[in-house]
Image (spheres, one colour):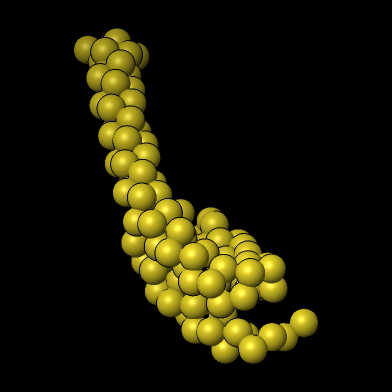
Amino acid sequence: MKGPWEQAIQRGVRLYQRLLILYPARHRREYGRWMVQLFRDQSRDCAERSGWLGLVGFGCRVLWDTAKMSVVEHAVAIRARCSTASSRRLNSTENGPFVLIASGL
């Protein structure tokens, strides 16, 4: 059901899509579509239950959550990259002696 707030919801969705740039690219690719759909659905629910005040309150909570969770997701991505780099270094040094022995050196 479309209410008087539908235009505001659509603007909010466009703004939220822009805010997703704060998340790591991989996170956006994997979850961005679903995050936007959830935002749209929850915006409508808040507007239908609580009107404009509910919609504004929801927007404020989303802004805070986006700022907080984008930092968390970047930290997770950095940790994953460091972990992968460490395991590559370990694997390359572990295979080194084997290569030398197998080649007869």
